[in-house]
Image (cartoon, rainbow, N blue to C red; front, side, top):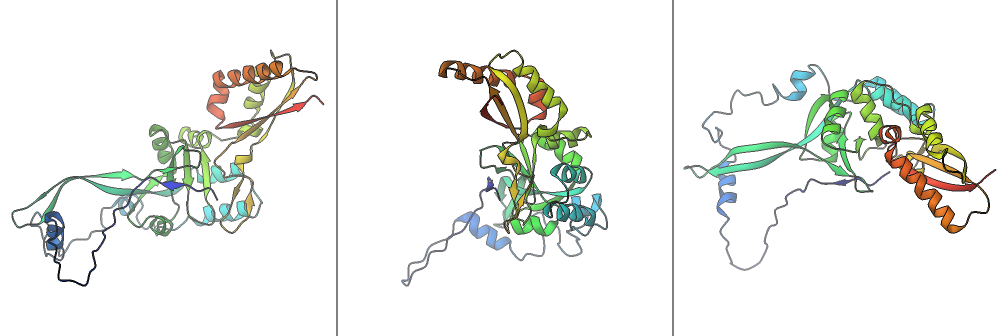
Length: 304
């Protein structure tokens, strides 16, 4: 499994032990928080009694009756993928219209201490949790069940959302990956072209078997005389591994596409370097490659 690191920093309190009679006064804001605990009203004077704190949350009002578990049909797809019965494109297709949970955390932006010595939260923001892929790219974690989310991050609140809208949000927030169920036995990564296809309501075809990508590679290579053929195959980063060690043919974070350039015999080192550089420049400016390919690795081989 890829090691995705959490960008949300959790606060920890540290107690000071000691056998002597040294007494320390608590900081004012800590003392106020303790005074606030257990009160019958909130800091605005409104009673807690009679309130349903769950009613009206994003989970209950958007998906009434939802038990917060993974959709059974989606779970069947996950199981079939782990068993090697379907490919990663089938998993992406199954994710297209499901309900997911995004983790958000409260971030206090402004507070004050009332005349009664209690902390009153004047302003707070709800922020999506972001994580970082091993290669440094920004990723959005999402979950198919509430328990998976709260077990992964005990300070996060699950917010239910439609997968397509979530994909749109990921694009707008410059995420390069969506990581589904991090910390679970099966962690499946949606690379950018896949969740962009979901956002647009289009079918996703992996780049390593996409005819448009194959044609673009041929077009880039055609003017380069030293290249006799160009081949596309799954990159080493397509593959992923379950927590219990099963290798899967999909769901990895990249490189996604392996490009093999077959080269004419007898090239000098300078000619070889120029050939590879020219091909890479062609990849960088090709609009089809930019849209449909997440990441590449280039391999060199002699003409067959």
